[in-house]
Image (cartoon, rainbow, N blue to C red; front, side):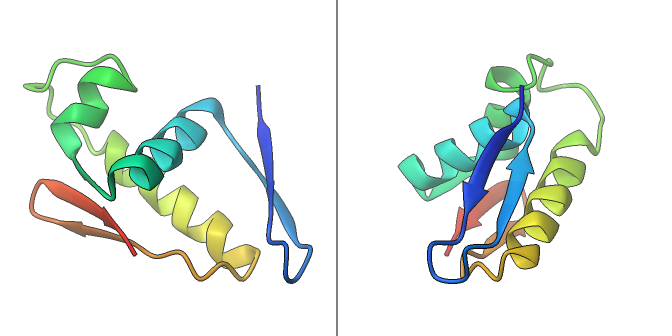
Length: 84
């Protein structure tokens, strides 16, 4: 199920998948998350799994936020993801 988010300044909207929504909510709650945490708790994969799935999700979230002119910035560094 998709969830709509709206920029309350520009009134632009975009839809997030359930995984994208869960990742974004966790980032808002914690401000910093390890990729392994997202692999295990959101995507239900073992942390030993070699995958670029998290980066793919983050890329789509970044593009969607950019499309609604959001000021939210998601930074990946090493094994951590930060919300600014």
